[in-house]
Image: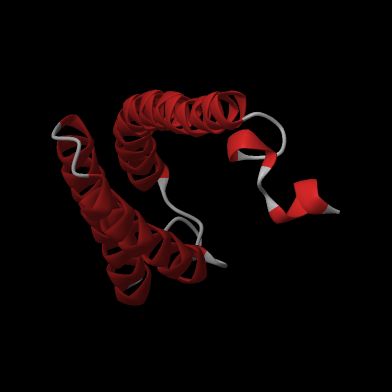
Length: 137
């Protein structure tokens, strides 16, 4: 949908306004996602991100064939700039969380492996005093 000879038809104005409201809603959702990430509520972050992706897909469908006027493009660009700034911070927090979990998993796996090695050293290769079924073969 485009403007006709630089005249904004009522349907164009309505379509553009609906689209921009969608971007404002997406902007508000990005605020919530960032707040949740700062609170380290990762389950809620994932839930909000899922809804965010649904909103993005809906906006893509709404925007198909719609050419915004200058004011609409400026408004959309400002909203996207705010969304992307928050998205950057959320990503940094998610990466830090992933690294933290990786370290915890490394400690956990390392601890388990260390315990297995200590146990095998305590019992020797054949188990306690070589009395394992494998030692009798």
